[in-house]
Length: 325
Image 1 (cartoon, rainbow, N blue to C red):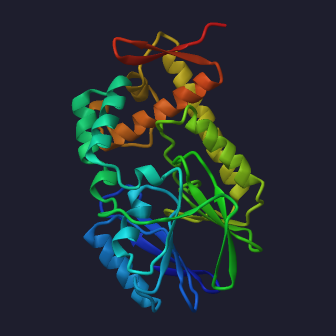
Image 2 (cartoon, rainbow, N blue to C red):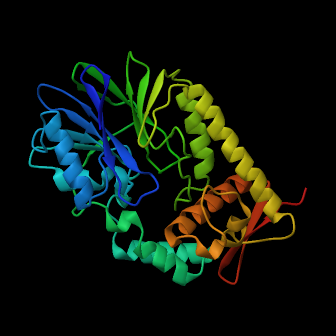
Image 3 (tube, helix red, strand yellow):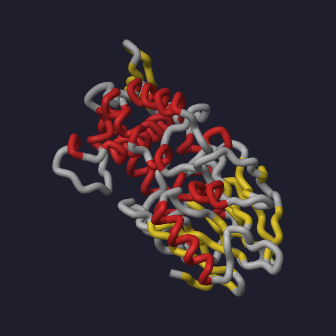
């Protein structure tokens, strides 16, 4: 599907086979010199064929475009480095750069981190083996062009300003269409699902960072958010309020789960409401279980940052309990 957003700016919907996200919204700012593509899709054959066909439909090819990638996840970054040619520029943020193409040691290490939070190593290893970031990420390294908050790009007569929105990933970067109050927002905000906010090594409170980024975007007074998946957002202030309330509700559920005693994140996760179909928690797909546990960790870390809960390390496992007043 191709849809015109503004004159010279189109949305291409690239299906993501067997993914609950359904598709990635890839945007193209047409330009007489070098059009700019905002986000791609998984590095897998089905996505590649559709992406190339959509490019051809608007008269473009991989040889003619540059890329702006909002964040490191494979459903946004995966195809960019694979399709890049000599002379192609891929704009990318610096904090996400170390994880653009993680090695095998990283996945093993992350499996052990989740084990510390109570997820059995067999489950975390299976989830890491089937993780889309491992399977559908870039095939090769690439000399990305780093952009920072406030940097300006000019394409197709539009001035595009980088807006850093830390939270969904350490360096998630949006792109504001100045003068039109529209934001290419990647996964910072989504219209009918909530972005995954998970733990990140080196970040003590990713959820706190995400909530601050929502406030920052609210101050932009947007007319429309051009999302990375599914429906676009026309009531941006209303959606921001919904997202903040969603996380407040989840925080309340985490506190409730800890009222009968200390728990690790993996034991807390089944006690929280998730938008997943399952009869027994053990039946949940390993990758979805991993994502849910990561979200729980982020909420526990935020509660610890607020002084509501405390963490302790016992026998190699991280446990959380409600802080005494």
